Length: 467
Image 1 (tube, rainbow, N blue to C red):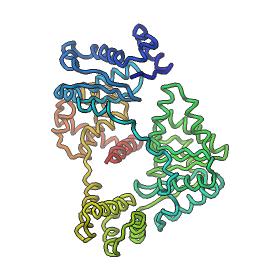
Image 2: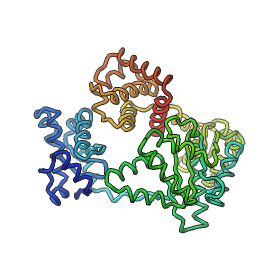
Image 3: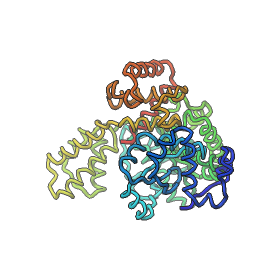
């Protein structure tokens, strides 16, 4: 499979001392050449016998975006590589390309499925062009009335009154529905309008990729020439210095050219301690509105509205029962109605109290009993601090690695309730007293350092979002 290689990639390869390996077009067409370079890098960290023992049956398959895909037919070796050496592979890829890569190792069955898989269907990028997320489908109540009115005003006269519009509140309360509704209405009135929607963490990733590939100008054109810019979960840019700087200039360009900006967040700007002051003041230039959990009457209306959309007839008793038991957010309410419809369609049974009870119980269990694995937590820590799995689990004492390791231990204890001894096993059989000390260090620092506490909060939110 051909490897697409940019000029900046060639520069990285030459700078890293791989000029002899660079062979122009021949290199670009060989994933094997990249794998050979990875093996050479790993030989500086691992014994030759280790390489020969565990990697002799590994063959490279493809380099897709930021994922290196490998194949290993031996289940035992594949499992061992995944447990012990993925960090070495990823680290070698980073040394070569100066970028982070994930590693995927296929079994025989996985390789066959990969080779036979049809091209992945493109998911619709512009959900606001569907009729699902509109103002008409949004249930208004005391908890979201102001946010709804502000969104309607922005859609009616973009950049005239509230620019930016900043909507904040917990997950699942309708923030994304509102910004989709704004986009949907503007699209109906101005079909040619350039509307850009992006999540905060995706904005960060796009910016990093643009810098890595030398496509900064394309990135800026995309965002700075938008008629309407919608950014979901803008809180993720806080603390990312270069990304904040880029967004600052994007914001200024759009604002000065009278283009509408709509942002959502899980908290107001003043509670983002790591947000650049320049951005904080600009986020507060327009209108800040919050959305709160819906009250009982609004929850009843939401259940009825969703049931009507699905063509489902629910009795008042069933509607009331759902609304009284599912209280946390709109998304869970709608998910419960969908689950009840699935019970009816798949089992062909009437909607009695037992089936409704089962659906509600399953949805509540899904929300309340999510327990992330240590691997999930560690992977998120590695992503946040930009360190690799092998380093955080190993013995390195670099300050960033130590901090990430301590936060990982703290979150595993807090989110999965592992014993100190079990947590120690995840980090090279460390003693339980070491784990206890690390957790105490994190707790003490969170009390003194608001920026650090917010970073832990952000990581926790990212992990919880994976449920």
